[in-house]
Image 1 (cartoon, one colour):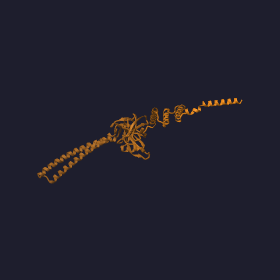
Image 2 (cartoon, rainbow, N blue to C red):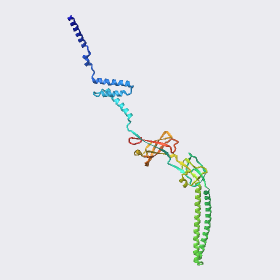
Image 3 (tube, one colour):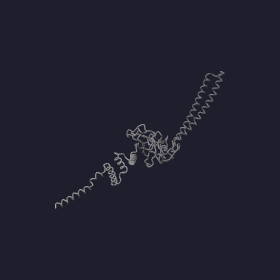
Image 4 (spheres, rainbow, N blue to C red):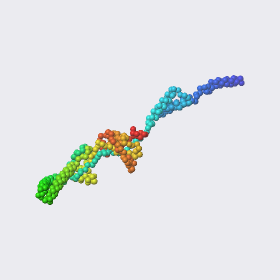
Length: 367
């Protein structure tokens, strides 16, 4: 009985030893992966899984290459790995250049209005009543063109009176010329008699004085004629000024004259700001704009920029600085610029609102 148990126990012991010899534990140290290799394989697999789960948020080739490059630092990389790393660096540099373009830019901006440097209010030189208005707002006129006609009876009477005064002066001069002739003849006779001692010394002196008086009378008559001519020119000038003419070529931008109105002379009209009309030269428009006075260091004549009108927001055009104001505005903290216009849109008008932009690079130069 004991022999049977011993046989069974021995059999079980041998079976256990056989199973132990077949166990994987004895060879586990031969197939165990090295930690560096396990790390290199585990991280790419995790990254690939992350790309799949997040829907491709990251650009995985670059990331994987960078991670592989980082993991490969302890040992020299192969040629293929080095090429992949270089490609990843170049693509990363390109994206960095797109997001960081390099030199930063800044802008000088401002606002202002379109201005006509050549604009004038037209006044009547002399008073009168308006009998004719030859223009309307928006009309294009040339220098010397008739604009408004006035009527002044006093000016016409003055011309007629000046003409009459000249006629009278001419008659007086003719009479003085006759007197001068007689005085000359008398003097000549008296001198002959004085030579013959046929007349007294007093008579000769009187003849000479008469001659001088006749000469003086002729000079006065000649001056009267000249004064009459001057009066005629004045009367004609005043009469001519009753027709108000354009001082230069331009556009009628404002009209206050109406037929039948009585206007004052210029000296009174200017004081009361009662002009007949306004003419503007619209061929030389500029923009007067205000910019922050803190930008003065970057401003100088000749800098170019861009302007856009509120009336034509989709039609920007080029401008350039003509000059800077000599003083800044203490109230607004701004500096005024005058800018010339390069190919502005058709239909531009004085007093239109404008916005300007001058782009500068980091060195302060226009782009």
